[in-house]
Image (tube, rainbow, N blue to C red; front, side):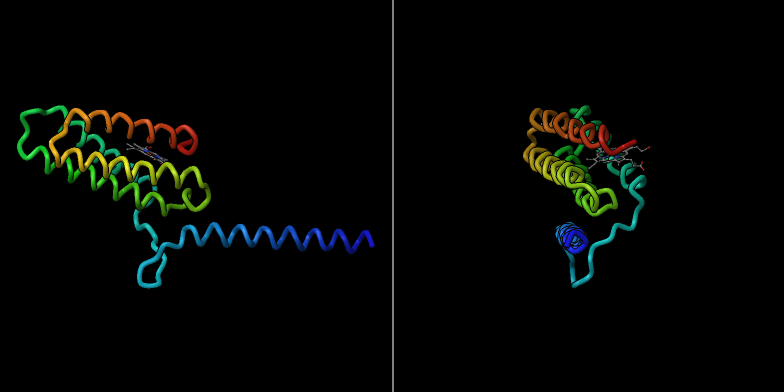
Length: 145
Ligand code: HEC
């Protein structure tokens, strides 16, 4: 009898594990044309790109006399939003829910900054950049070891 209940418990544990794994992967399997999206660039490379776009955003915000500031700010912010979007599909994102949430948060913050840029609201955009920086730091504190 005891043996049988241990067996049942093991079966139940295995079933739950598979159930959770299936939930995880379906959360990740946002797909296009039936094929799951897979980033091409390494996570490290993607971060270098995120950093580049973030630095470009800051330098456009600093240079009040720059040409086409609205458009350039919007472009850099949307490129960063896209990088954050891709980050949501990277290996760390598959494993950790908080990672996916921070990536999604950065994506929406960057898109919002892009809108502010297009509208010429540079003061608000500076605030948005600071908020975005806090998201970078939150994820790094836990996942960039
Ligand atoms: C959802 C998580 C997450 C977010 C959000 C995030 N990062 Fe990262 N970042 C990582 C991880 C994980 C690493 C370590 C990966 C590696 O270098 O292999 C990293 C590493 C880096 C590095 C170090 C690369 C090096 O030279 O070692 C830079 C620079 C960087 N991130 C920039 C940024 C910037 C800028 C932002 C915000 C605009 C940001 N990251 C947001 C997860 C994140």
